[in-house]
Image: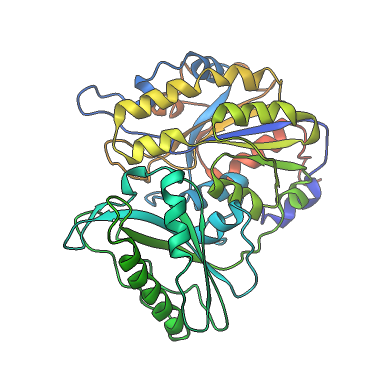
Length: 401
């Protein structure tokens, strides 16, 4: 873990390479008709073959019983205590699209959404409208003026955007407008502390003006705001672990997560195939790579079991392409479970495997929840996987005399 100061003198820089593939929303639960999870249902011969030569187990992203957001889930995998380093999604989205955040700025992650004539939510993601439809809506919202505050709206990807407020006396300590369920109205913003009352009032003004500007739209006719955050500060991952880390992610938020960990962000395209190609092109330049796969989480959140199975099967052919680079350590992990039968993030432990020249003979028959529960690693905190990676790659020396 990042904060284990007792180990700082044990970390050593070497030429060995580590690749961490994070499959967003990897874990699942059994389908009621088949008794098999998405991973158990999917045909994934390459992941299964890798599991047979890997140390496997289940990771707990935060603590048992707590369903994490993607932010805490990823930070834990990077070795940060997610209960200590709490970062709002707004800052992550902003940094991921290279929006400048100054001290005192406040940012939020925004969704375009769909409401009915009574103001109740029909779709929290506006049918996942594409960027070419949401970007003009962002231009419209960017014209909103608030007294004494600069208000900027930036398109992110698909139905997502970033709202940045810049001015004196702003606070991130306000509530969100997203109720996280449909069939109810959006929530009014409240201050969590008295010093945030000004910010809460300004945001409520913004939401009211957005409602008017979008009222004639068929799908993106309203906005939801969450993840209020100011500029974060974390110990640099590379400095602590003596690594030269890089992040490769098509989705902006995950570039933001890599940014707050002080990874080098390598530009890539919009698909996972682009990410893998980018990994190959830059493999000589870094000794640690974080690479991100999003589709499994999106399908799980949509409650589409078959679609999530398909995304896992579509991931599988890329595994040999990463293995062809011969990394000293190759890890496949998930930031959290997103079971399709729940259509939401969950608290369930997540399958994990680590492959190195030292893991032969530790394998299990296949890569899924049930098999990983029998793996040699057992159930471990997600914050521990970096220590395992460093040890297996020769980057963590003996502790103590």
